[in-house]
Image 1 (cartoon, one colour):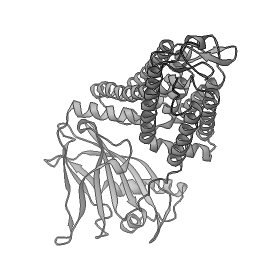
Image 2 (image 1 turned 180 degrees about the vertical axis):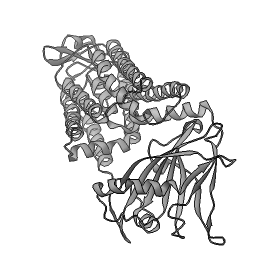
Image 3 (image 1 turned 30 degrees about the horizontal axis):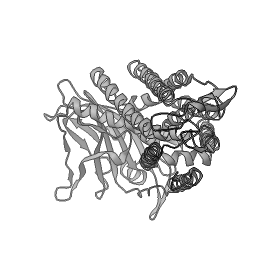
Image 4 (image 1 turned 135 degrees about the vertical axis):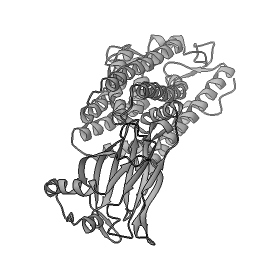
Length: 476
């Protein structure tokens, strides 16, 4: 009988080497460069149905020169004493109105100082002020005039960049990322008249479809960029094709049974996070982020231990549903500060959940061929235990970090989140190779037994593309 062109052990070593090299390259890739701060003010607008919130980022040196409030070298305690004077100053220089000139109501919130950064021109620091701009009766938050001349009225070279960071109706959902905001104008002094001209904000009308689609994209983000959610689902699926006896994984189950277990686990996780997401959003629950994130890290740690030694064999779906509740609470933190109306919130939840499920389904479809094929490889236990141990290390690092103990393991694990598109590409390539390999085995009439030995069909039932060999169900 003709031999296959490459042995299973050689294939495994080659795939392991490629996987290690790719993972190391992705984890050790340099983080993106951070732009140097510029000496101008920034106004970030989050537009809602009847109001807008604004985040003002003001250079401390220029603000101190223009306002007469000395903020250089200020501490947190010193800033608290100066906050009333800062709010009074800004109230006189931030004047939104309707197009007809009717004044909006401005309420100032938190006032904080950023960290000091060293630049080529010396230390740089910003004052960050939050404000709520409420439109009067009949006012339109999509068309209004923003009058603003703080700093600019005294420092003629100063400018204020105005951007929309969030606008649900037009699908603008930057999720706190200033770099994803859309600039709508610049406020500066007219050197001919030495006056500051107000900026007319004129946004598109928008639609429910734009907002829902934006939430679909946003729902995919926690899976694509949140390494912890990705790892939790993968680590629960890793032992899905295995049979537990006592306190060890001792054999494999049929392909249909494995696929059913994977489907139930994924569905339970979906139901769990969808339920808690809806309850958190519609119930306006004020959920502290730290315990939720720590709970997620703990769930990954439990899943990793289960992949090494069965803790709840056959009940993965129940555990996925339980821990899915915590993951849903984490997802709800994304929606917490958007101030959406009831109708917008309902559409947002639908779009957000669909985004999560689309990426989850893609993940499962890409991982499934490899999960089924790996059950027949020699050394599969060592490979599974290595993956689970690495995941447990990352989960432990996250858990310590999220209870207040920063560590390099958590930072390294977080950095992988910026490379998930590449990781999905690796999964896709692995899935294609696995499908190709099973096709070769099927055509040659050869397979792999439960212990990983290659064998012809007259001697041993085989693993084909249609299922796992029945003999392996009895052990090994």
